[in-house]
Length: 379
Image (cartoon, rainbow, N blue to C red; front, side, top):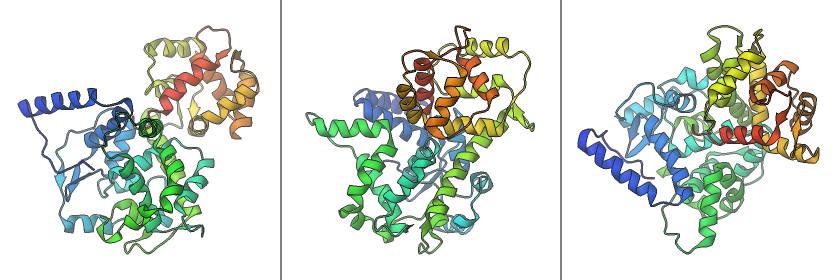
């Protein structure tokens, strides 16, 4: 990968790099620009460098998915081998994982770029997809994932991220678009082929730089194996941790956040031009604030991770072409996801998106805005 050892430029050097970066982006296809946005964000928030590669700390990762800009502008700190070994020695085993893992580790961890992509994928995937992901890693089908199998993920991403000439090659262009839409799809569609190809042979463990994630999953010697229960717990904990951080930012120690703040969080990473009008909807429609609990907050984002299934359910109900009421919405959510959203939560959602004030929700507008937010896994 291109994340080499560099010092942070300033003045004329930065201006020249910015112009070169802008020109490079303009010359690339849409898919590359999308991938570049992940690369750019990783570079923006990463703070460590080791053996010519950039790394994030757990704190860097949390900031990258909950903040628009880094809290503090930093130069990349070069790590020695001894410093890396000390950092990794403090990594807890997977069975000690929790929904505060990243917050507890703070600066005491290193996360590689390919792992950053993997973690982003986790944040927007439904629980039902966790088993699929695990099975993709489990090459020999023994219901355990070892370090060698897990490293195939990095080879898949690295191969897809190589810069190749694609002019006149429709098939490669289509593959690029697939990458642009979802790295998770790349894993799902490519892993089966990769696991039984020479990719697995090329993941030389002696050439691998251990990271916090590798040590967490497979131990300091790399000999431990990952069970599905541990894998599921890690993914669920990560989703919960990021949601808790967002929730606590607005709750200020209380057990609820206001309906207006809930709306603000929902619309935060969308392309909605006039967010103020949506917030005004909430103020006028819900004058007596009841608040949104964390469980309601979490259930809604679990629903968002099942948005595609919900869209299918809506089509089966033949609701996709018209506005729907609160009871229909709640029923469709339950059928599609098994989640029962509280009446107050559904009521709040309607008040946010009911621009016509007719107590009906425009399915197409709601789906469009929420898909827009969902695709901003990299923030």
